[in-house]
Amino acid sequence: MLKASLSSKVDPRDAKLSMAHFYVAFTALLVGGLAGLLQVLVRSGKFQLPFGIGYYQVLTVHGVLLGLVLTTFFILGFHLAAVSKTSGTLTNKQRTVGWIGFWIALVGTVMAAVMVLLNQASVLFTFYAPLKAHALFYLGLTLVVVGSWFNSAVIIMKYAEWRRANPGQPSPLLTFMALINTLMWCVATIGVASTVLIQLLPWSLGIVDTVNVGISRTLFWYFGHPLVYFWLLPAYMAWYVVVPKVIGTKVFSDSLARMSFILFLLFSIPVGFHHQLLEPGIDPAWKFLQVILTFLVVIPSLMTAFSLFATFESFGRSKGATGLFGWLKKLPWGDARFTVPFIGMVAFIPGGAGGMVNASHQMNQVVHNTIWVTGHFHLTVATAVVLTYFGVTFWLVPHLTGRTLTKKMNKLALTQGILWAVGMTFMSGAMHAAGLLGAPRRSSFSEYGGAAQAAEWIPYQIAQAVGGSILFIAVLLMVYIFINLAFFAPKGEQEFPVGEATNQAEKAPMVFENWKLWLGITVLLILFAYTIPFIDLIQNAPPGAKGGRFW
Amino acid sequence: MAKAEMKYDTQPENEEHSSLKGTLASVFILGAILVVTWVGVYFLYLDRF
Image (cartoon, rainbow over all chains, first blue to last red):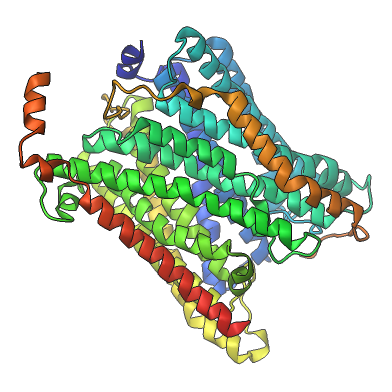
């Protein structure tokens, strides 16, 4: 059964549902990318926004569209396609639930986007209280989350159906991975749903006068850190399972991949305090505990790095590579489906290194609220993750639309990846450097009254504008490639590459599919890490903040 | 076919064929990048605070 489903195409009805998500994702890329360009130009000090458009309005557009809309819609579309491909076509009921979820999320996105564009919600993508947005913005975000839950239900239903049909068998690897990401998302979104529905929405509607900022930020980051892993795990799905097939080798270890995903489920959530290390109201001992849990996430990341190096080396050596690094030369550098995600993998090395600095409790003081942090997540999510999404787009979109990636498009895709790498090296490199010199993030251009320290930052801001402009060209190229693959590329069969494990005879341990165990440990870790700090935050709460509009 | 594979597996040049020494070197380089970055910012921290 597994073999039969692997050799088949994604059913056109499921393909349509996936593609609907991708249209939204790439529209967000275009508009969000334009907002990014405007930001770096303003921060260079040489350009001012016309028509009274505010810097923070543009910053919110950029963060919400790229950080929340592009990622969420791409991931939901990719999950659906991966599960349909590896566990079989969705039933009509499952597909209907998927479409309901899509429309709810789309309506929510439009509501939130309209409020941001009308300057009624310039609260940045973290929407921290006491910044108060229009109630429709919060309602819109709620609908996006509710819509994503419908999609999560589809993944869970399909997985359950597969397990019932194949008793005693480990689920297909891509389905297993999509399920872990879905479960993590469901547990994490409880936090953001709570702060929005219990705190922010009633406060924005005027039902309550004040808001407890500490609690809302804690609930946000309970969600916010697993959110970054929600972005990352689909990229890992491609790195572990798709890339080996693209280069023509096997998955290094099926069990290792499953183990690393389980560890991400356990350790991605009880770690939100590492975003709040400099906040009052949380005892340092609890912050330190979450710092330790954060560093445990390094383990599956390093397992992934090892596994990928081993995949590439085994492949190169099977092609006759010699010497310590001769295998690098054997990799198919002319294939954008490999090279563009590979650039992402390389970017994840300095991205991960920077992340360890950010999470190192006291050392966080060096970089906190500086543009170093912005540079960090532009390496992780905005390079490692999105270049992998683009690498997936190059084969998945033509697979779903019954078209092919032509040689010409492949070449353009390679150019796109290289431009992105060059632009990001300038932009993120300059952000890291300026951050170490103290340049703040989330702030428009200012000479700070002629302060000497602020003058040091300006050359780096110009470098950011250069990098950002190159990145915008790469965004335009990517949108062009997407439109080509969706509507204009020649009709044909494009492979959906799914790697097989090196050792087929060795079945993955069934304990990996024991969700009572893994969700049980996840919940215990969360209760352990958060219960007492929450009691503290509630019992010792300062007077609530009235908040308001500061833009 | 299994037999042929077995035979291939025991040939001396297979040392080179299945070696993961490049992977070992790569993970050490990766580890070094992590350590150097961390220590660099650590000294900046000691200097400033």
